[in-house]
Amino acid sequence: MSNEIFAFIGTGNMGGALARAARQAVPGQNILLANRTREKAERLAAELDAVAVENHEAAARGDFLFLGVKPQMMQGMLSGIQDTLSHREKPCVLVTMAAGLSIERIRRLAGVHWPVIRVMPNLPVAVGKGVMLCAADGVDERTLAAFRAAMAGAGLVAFVPEGQIDAGSAVSGCGPAFAAMLIEGLADGGVACGLPRAQAQSLAAQMLLGTAAMLMENGMHPGALKDAVCSPGGSTIQGVRALEDRGFRSAAMEAVIAAYDKTLALGK
Image (tube, helix red, strand yellow):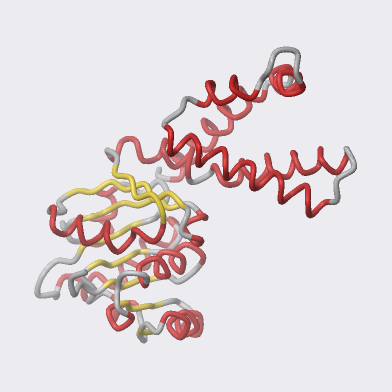
C-alpha cells in the first residue's frame, strides 16, 4: 500500500464501515476522521487507532476524501470546504456515496473539476461481505489500484459505468433489506412448523449465505440451482409453486424498480 491519506467526512454507519475496511490495508495515521459531532469521530478513531481531526476543513487535505453525508446535506457540507479545496496544492479524489448525486453534480457543488469516484456500498460492507459499486471519472490507473487495495476489506468492489450505478444500487444497496425480509419470512415459517425462533433464523440466514456462495463460486444460473433442489413430486417444488402463485419473483422485480425510481427522484 502506498502512502495516500484516506479522509472521511461523516463517520455514521456507512462512513464508519468504509473507514474500518480501509484500516485493514491502510496505517491508522493515514486515516483522518471528521464528523459533525466530533465525539463520534473520536470514538471511531480510538477503535481504529486513526486520527480524529477537528473539522471538515482539516479532513479536506486527504488524498482520497470520502464524502459520507446524506444527499440533502451535501451542498451545505461542500460549500463549507470549497475554499480549502481550491487552495490545495494538488487535487484529491472526491469519493461520494450520496444516492442520486452524479459525478458532475458533485464537482459543481465542490467548485472543482477534480477526479471523482462515486460509490454505492451496501450495509454488509460492515462485516467485509458487502458490495461496493463504483463509477470513476478522471481517475488514473495507479490511483484506482490504490483505491481498490484500500477498499478490498469491504467485499466485492465492482466498477460500472455511472449510468448503471443507480440500477446496480437498487439491487445491491437496497437488496439487504429485501434479503432480511426473506430470512424473516422463512424463519416465521419455520416457527409455524415448530422450530425455535433463534434456530429458524440461523437456518434461514446460513441457507441464504451458502446459496449465494454457490452462485458466486460456480457461476451457476439461479434457475439451475433451483432445478437441482426440486426433485420430481418433492417438497421443494410445492414450495416453489406456492411462491409463484403469490407473485414472488414479480414482487422482487417490482421492489428493485421502485427503489431505482426513488433513487432517480432523489437526484432531482
